[in-house]
Length: 194
Ligand SMILES: [Zn+2]
Image 1 (cartoon, rainbow, N blue to C red):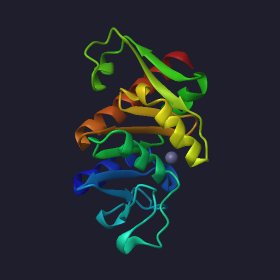
Image 2: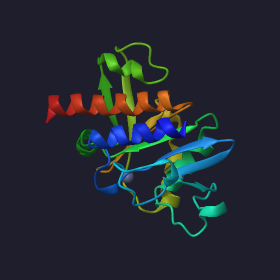
Image 3: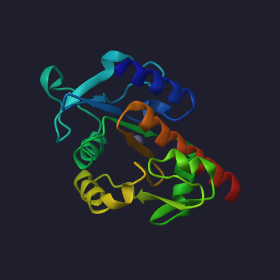
Image 4: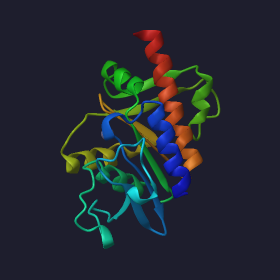
């Protein structure tokens, strides 16, 4: 799992989804959350760049003293809301960032074949709504918002306004599919509507 996740992170960096050491990624194994440490150039990420954190996003075990990024709490919240999730990917792709400033509550897509990339979507004909959250630095407020809007997270992803995307899955393949589907849809929307 870890090797493939590192490979994915490097690939996403090549796509321009993690400029300037931004973004973070995590996986859960045996009830233990592993997250990328803060400040790593994602073009250079290796297997040793993951640290273990507790449910409050504090580093634990041999990693005590290493400060995880503030966004780590979002990973912990998603794991807590969805017990079968094992991988969370966070991207800073520019199309979701651009599109997020044109919608209020959620981004809507309709009629795109790739909508079926989201778990539970069986036809391109339905309307898919991906929630947008404001980019709030107050992590406690953010956690509350996530919990309040849990029912909107049926497509296993969301957008933070002018910031980026989060997507998750029961395994890496599923999490990747969700992130890539969302990014592709945002790109199509932006090209069509800018
Ligand atoms: Zn971010």
